[in-house]
Image (cartoon, rainbow, N blue to C red):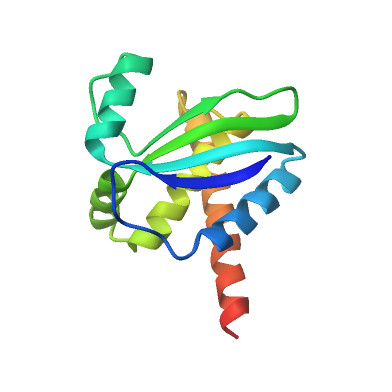
Length: 146
């Protein structure tokens, strides 16, 4: 049980997964959930498109897909993240690749926690949570640098 990071079809490796893991533990605690097992898989646009078509019947690229297999308040699931799409988003929104990648991880974890983003009000709530936890992540980084 725990948080596992893996790479599917990409060579890029991230050096800050320990900090992201710490953030996810904080999120789970604040959202009053328990950790079962979360697998975070970093992949490519082509792989995420394949997953999107096969499981969700969507024919477009996306940055993150979360599969929720929770057992009551225990978080169990997989989060697939397209690093290609994250890089595109970072340029588009003029943010660092690191911040965008962390934001997308947060988004996936929020889906596992139970947040949705289909309706405008749900998207707003999710964006607020994303910003809150991204700020927490950046605070953790600034404290470690001090």
